[in-house]
Length: 401
Image (cartoon, rainbow, N blue to C red; front, side):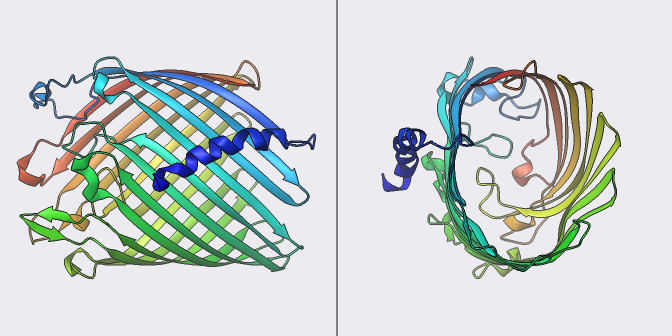
């Protein structure tokens, strides 16, 4: 119970935090939202797969999600306390066994000591249903993530700043069939930043992560220990060459080591860059490119090397109406799953989304959208049909009080 009890403590502390609000600049803002989505391929199955064989699953579904939340900002001198609590009730029209209660909560203390030292101490909790994009488990699996973190900033000069941070993450799967994917990771960070008089900045950052899986993976009756250590050094950049253009992101080198399975080791460049362009007052365009090692807790006990790009235009049609879109292409390389030599699985994933957002007031928002995706797999394990196509339409209403 202790591993799951902190979020309920936050809820118990919530009325006290509200009662403590005294400064007129402090805020307490409850909210409620509703979302309805139709998905024609919920379990991300190939069109050739007979999904009814899996205990009568129904391929398409309508998902209703109702979320209640509240945000609290409390200022005491130079210290700030922030609470963001959200709980969702998720209902499935066809696959009722997937009905669940999800949560997304965060408590943060932004602290300041003198003029040079500042930082953040926080705790984040999420509980959400695991997806079906990359798994052959079609039951309800609730993934709980506990994240405790702290960081320190020391600005000894107006243009120079040193950073240090430490975080602990714990992923827990509720389904007994998925417990081998439980993961605990400790990450330490150190960085140095320089800001120019024109508010551009550059810097260096080093991170070290130590990850372990409490429940060992079983492959061909052999227990596999997927513990790893990861080193990453990156150059950081925030640059605005013109009033309408900005570039930000990082470019680095990553080394990931598996003490028990060196064939899974990785070393190579990684990056995550975004170019923002505002050609007109009411139009924006974001171009992103990335090459990253990803841990997908509902997918694999190791890593996936993901490389791709996205294009995200936005048009502010009127002060109350905006049209947004996003098109992305990713290549997923599964070299992190290699145990024995052989062909490596590789996916090409295309996704597109368009949304119309209407905000009649500052406290209300209505969204209508359409999303579609496609995956093509090369060298699928056991010759399984991993290709899929899906389409979904969604609408949501959000109110803040």
